[in-house]
Each structure stands twice: as structure tokens, then as C-alpha cells.
Length: 270
Image 1: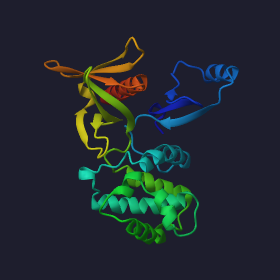
Image 2 (image 1 turned 90 degrees about the vertical axis):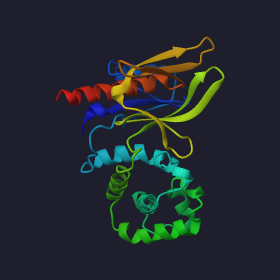
Image 3 (image 1 turned 30 degrees about the vertical axis):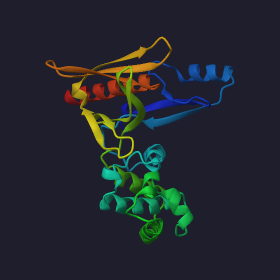
């Protein structure tokens, strides 16, 4: 396991966003302060950058990564839907994973129609090509292949399937691209080992992409009214462009970009 790809996050109950603990912070210093303030908190260890392959031979690793990835998958963030349609191969993957997710939850019976609804990514329920009854039939037909697996084997197979999807290993952020004070467009920002991607809110197709080799710098800016922005300078020595993003997660986006760039530089010098 490459520990440099993992971060320890502290989630404080009531906070909208989570932030990783900095390397120079001591866990007990942070938790003692939260205890003093009588705040409820959780410590979560999860993968933050994704340069190295999955380690599906480790049960602990599979548990950690599965619990991190499953919510994004079920929310539909990993789906790319050109024209709001699903490719046939993706439909097959979704049906197989629904059966695996059912088994991963330690279920021993065939998924029912009511249960199937909660085993599919949310956008899959709205596509016109596949009716609810068809989803149920496909999921149930996959059940025979997975019902004898252990829960950890089921989780490992889900990760193995998803690892072949283009947006697997992405950290997702809701951002507004600010061209000028009057023009603001909503996007999802996806950071993964291939770089910075601005993706469409609905189809998740990439609209703009910058490899990390083209990310020159990031700078956090706070306006007089407290609005937080991130200025991202991208390009090369001849041509550069600054993209301003309005986001409450500017610190985390900037930190992750630095982490990826540092990782790339280390790999180049190995």
C-alpha cells in the first residue's frame, strides 16, 4: 500500500465540508481541542490521490477504498452519459455491480424490484433506454454468478470493474467558473491522475482538461464579502491562462493539485 496516496480526514458534525489533517498536525492535538469544544467528530482514513494500481489482495485495503468509492458511484458521479444515454457495456457493468453490491451487503436472496432501485446509480434510473423492469431482470440474472462470493470478494469485484471507468479515482468538487462578475457557470471539477477536468453537470463529459504538467500555480483569494475563490494558472511558457473558480473547497482543491504534482515529480525521478 502506498501510504503517500492516503490522507486522514477529520469530519466535524455539522460542517459542510471535510478537510484532511496536515502532515505537521498531531491527531491528539486536534481531537483534544474538539473534545474541549464538545464537538462530535469522526476520523476517516481514505485515498486522496490515485497514481498506483489497486491492491485487491488486501482485505483492509478493499474495505477502505470500497467504502470511499461506493457513495460516489451510487450518486452517479462516475457515470459518463453522452446525450444522457448509457453505452451498452456500461449497462452490463451496472447490472453486474448491482448484484455484487447486494451480496457485498451480506444479502443471500435474489434482489427484489424495490431493492434494485437502491443498487443502481441515481442517473441510471432516469435513462430512457432501460425500463425499471429491465434493470430488475438484468440484476437478477447476474445474481447466480455472485451469490456464492464472500462480501469482500464482491467488494473487490466492484472495484475491479469501476477501475476501468475513465472517472474512477477522481475527487469531485462543485465549482463555478467565473469569467467575469456577471457570468458564472456551474461545473463539476474532477481531479485524477490524468489532470484537472471540468465536466458537464449532467452528462459528466469533459469540457476542459489540463494535465498537471500544464498547471503552473494555484492561488486562493477571498473577496471582501467572504466569498472564496481559487485562481488556477494553466498553460506553458508561451501562453498562460488564469481560470477563476468560486468554491468553498478552494483549500482542498489546491492541496490535492499540489499532491498530484509532487507525486508526478517523484515518479519522474525514480
